[in-house]
Amino acid sequence: MIGEVGLAVALFTGTLALYEGFRALQARAPAQRAWLNPLVLTIVCVGLALRALHLPLATYREATRPLSWLVGPSVVALAYVLDARLDELRDRARAVLVSLTLGAVSGAFTAVLVARALGASRVVVASLAPKSATTAIAAPVAARLGGDASLAAVVVVLVGVVGALIGPALLRALGVRDRHAFGLAMGAAAHIVGTARAREEGAAEEGASAAAMVIHGVLTAVLAWVAVRVAGP
Image (tube, rainbow, N blue to C red; front, side, top):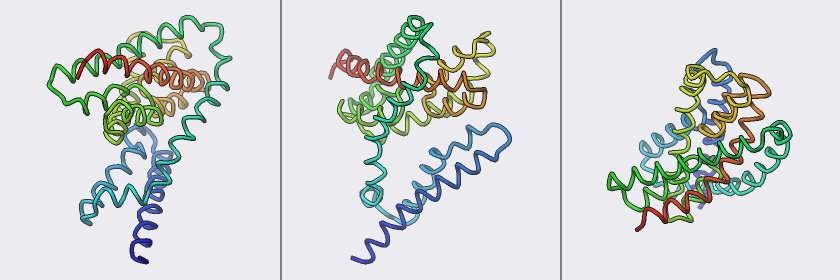
């Protein structure tokens, strides 16, 4: 019993220590910090550790259950982010809603239809459908659709890292100069990782990105359900 408790404490504290360590490393890196995303690096290290120690995933999941529980409150906290940033975009609300809706439709339906065309199982399809939402939204949505919440979370993180890496250069190459447009694109395409990258550009970009992340996440939660239903069993 004591051994099980000790193992659970070690897994829990070790996960937190890894994340905080990688977060500090990312903050000190001079450039290309998206490659040092603490969430991705923590997932990789935990996976390697579990494999090396021959520990079942169920054991780790039980030990870190408090972290999983925090996903729920984090969804509620997103409402505060939206309220704090909404005034910045009020004057262009129509353009913002239209662009984010089109982005959410494209993100949900392309993921589902391409996965279906490639012969993916329903679990995989349902896990990919909410990839355009932040993890706090995508994981529970995927589970409700019959997918795997863990797979959905991994996909969201990968999408976020790739978006944060290539997004700024791509937007500049396309001639996007408006600071709010830059932030909206980063928040919608790369979620929380993109918002962290947008923060490096300035307050306007960060605010627009945070608002886009929330609005796009809500839209994706609805459209993912529609896309999965359209794709069929």
